Image (cartoon, rainbow, N blue to C red; front, side, top):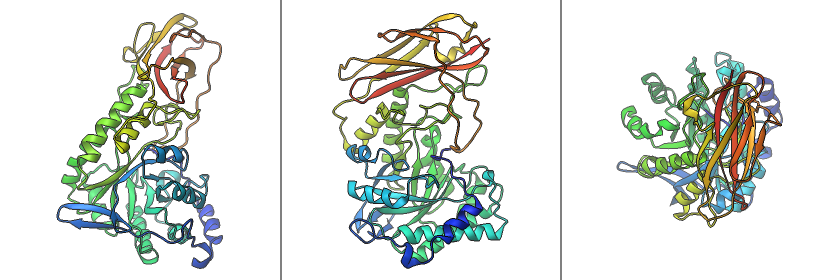
Length: 441
């Protein structure tokens, strides 16, 4: 999965970026408060610990490119990771804001991917990438909010050339030479197959931490760690709801998205059973996604809606980090029905037919709920790894909605795959959501 947004590492862009950074004196930045806070990984028997400023530091974080970080701090999170897309906000203001809020940042250095056309057999391209990374490190290394370096996001996803791992290791060695205060890792989609495990051991020995990104499969992470036999600590740099590639599908192949409440339950279970329960090897985690994005749907991975509303998954992380629920909690989404059927029924409708839709929801605080409905075409995206997707447009004029969680859908005239969305709001900045795919034919 799952970068936000897509990192397009074009060689000319690297050359331009590197050319703009001329010397260590020019690019080093000390940030608010001045001076790096040393971070290191230490071992005591079978237990690994991350130390920041000499004190144990358990990462309780989420993934974001810099959005909603005030809410992250207020919810008890202490860190966030980014993806360092070239279109993302500059790292210095993000680090400064993190410092102001008492947060740390796991800074991602973009690394080229074969699926985007990067050629690891091209020594000039690899050299330019290395120089770009070096200048990025010199720019940010002395900022007190910097926690660690993530060298590329999922460089193992659909790789064919193992030299990508040599390139990651070379960047890690460079970091240890010019920045003695921050550990290194790379964020792996991590199949834990023998070939990849061997590459980690043989081609990336310089990494301080091994990072994995798992969704439904996170339940197997402790077993994978044991079987891999890699004698280093682990970090979970992405985890969250069940992935769209891991769920049941309709008869025509549309993935069935869990409701906001089903996702929240998944976050809570896996935080307790994996992240917390295995803190001897897992240094902490970054939950995905402290924000919103389109990936198969506009609601699949975000803990927020596009309008900024907080969902139940964010409430769960608040509870995980603070040990208590937020003062106001998000609505519970109990189910969505179309023509008195659920998504698993592979619903097929007649063109222009009229069908009842019903959302079942409740609010833990007793707040009155309002409902918003949307109809969209099913996404035809085939991208992987979180690459940018287009958002299917809303189809207007096909819904007659009441204020009681009920609506009448006039099925589209044109045959095809569609998805009906419902959003439930409590009037206090919190929301629930669900959707149901259907086929018109």
